[in-house]
Image (cartoon, rainbow, N blue to C red; front, top):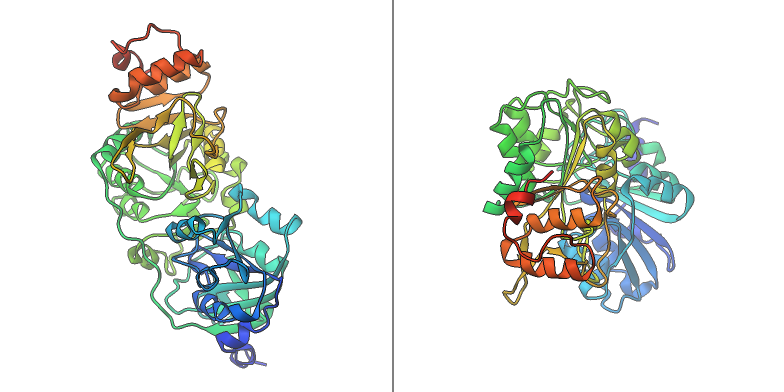
Length: 456
């Protein structure tokens, strides 16, 4: 049987495909932009027929239809490994539960600890060899497929075909059903605003990036600022080994800053496990052999991160306490995002030859009531999840400077972090540090900035 005939034997409507889902089953969705949006809507329409269908997703783009269709949370129990803005909305309504994960361990969870009845994934159209390319997310999808009893592929012609090292595609012979979607355009992020504080933070970080560094950047305005600043700098021969590929890598590449020739692991390649950004990024990735997606247990393995010399990890945080504990995923008991690969890259980068890990945050935040608060706190807010323990934290960066916490005592950490806090809060932080018995100076801020701000 030729491939096109084989394809047609498996082609069904979305309604037919989701009809095989039974009450009580576990349904896994493809990761990030591989989420099966058409099948999600079709499954949601069966809400009155089903009970306790448990759905797992990763970074769902928008609001999951299965969660929106069931305000009681009894028909569909929706869970997510990493929250997006839509997932936060659902979580606040009690309709989405977070699943804790160290991202590089994700495939192992599927191999050892959890089961999947039905796996649904959005892919690029089948190629001449019978493969459906996952496009912009390799991630944990190999392990999900190997663990699933039934596999449904949702085809979308807007999905870019992304080159990979391995496990970037699934063959028609592995698929139980194929659904053709409406071929909607790819979900694209709006360009985030870059603040003055972001630019100051970027200046601090970029000043410490050497020639031949191997970069990992997170998401948001700050990575964009760093990418643009590097593009305009004289830094040479940068490499890319990153969890997420974002638009700022294109800026650096087009400026000639990225060559990859100093990497030990996959020299010359931009290595990543998923991509998220603008249509410009997806166009850049389409059939581009310069870029290579790999499963997350390859990309995010701390030992592999460390294998590249001068690995530099740059990530955001929500808040940090005076001990150096970092939260990048919750504010109190409210889940905001997830652990993701921040621990993987912070740990792996520090163990690289000449490697560095930077945790970046603006010194203050303003709540919905207009109240300004310090993001460097004596202790984390009650209920806040620790993303990085104090033993893993390397550099902390605000617009006021940088603090290297490695090898520092608790009082040295307190001094260094207060030195990069917003000046309006330093006196209060010193008082709290004294109460916590982690303060060795006299209780005044005179000379604190000059002594500590860049005391690294």
